[in-house]
Each structure stands twice: as structure tokens, then as C-alpha cells.
Image 1 (tube, rainbow, N blue to C red):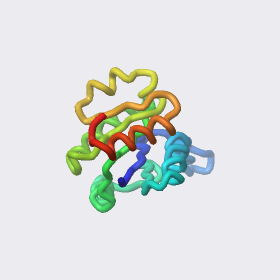
Image 2 (cartoon, rainbow, N blue to C red):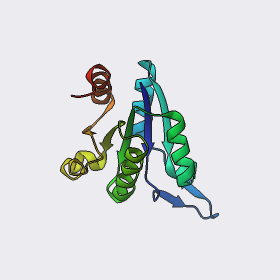
Image 3 (cartoon, rainbow, N blue to C red):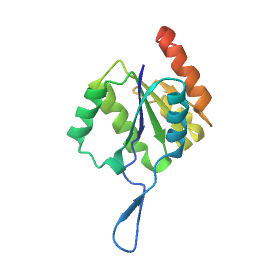
Image 4 (spheres, rainbow, N blue to C red):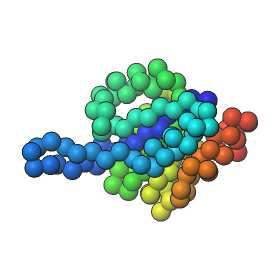
Length: 143
């Protein structure tokens, strides 16, 4: 099972006084990635803002790693980025499962459930829930 963890937000940074930009990686995704890696899964991590990849480079990266499951972290200010990325994934790999977690998914799960590109939502702390979801997907492709 090939898993891609993604922070799709393009807007979360802080301009420093010297003109450089300070970016903040998603600790939630890092915790989940570490947990799943220890459980023996292949994990790829993509932070859209930090990587500075173009859309074409992102598409090529996704095609190259060919993920079975894509997990997106959600923040309220970046929901347009989340929905855009989910759509991009489904256009590239329609059979990939898209799972959303994070602050916005926990606060407003109904908003995510209305998007046809989102397959599952993980609420609150996600390490164990996401692990068990992956186990279910591996077993039957459906919950």
C-alpha cells in the first residue's frame, strides 16, 4: 500500500524581516507518517508550499509514486487548496482513496462530505484511526 501525505495549503507562511519566508510543516501529517512507517507502510510526504513544485511537477510526482491513498490535512483558510488538490488527484488516479483530516475536517466534516472527491474523513487525533482505515482499505477497498 502506497500512501501519500499532503499539506495542500499554499498560503500558510510568515514573512520574516529579512524577506525570507518561514514555512510550517504539518506536525499532524508527520506524526501519522511516522506511525504508519513504523507499521511497515511506504510513506511519501508532500508539502505544496515548501516544495514549491509547479502543477506539472506535482502531476508528474503523483504519477511516479502512484499512491493508493492520499491523506490531506485541512485548515479552514486553505479549503480551496484542499478541494483543488483532491480534484487533481482524482483526475490523475481516480481509484485512489482521498482521506481528509486536521482542524477543518474535525470542525466541519459535513462540508467535506459534500465534495465528491473526498472518500473518508478522520476526526480529531488521526494516528490510530487512519491506521485502522488503511487496514480496512487493504482488506476490501470499502469500509
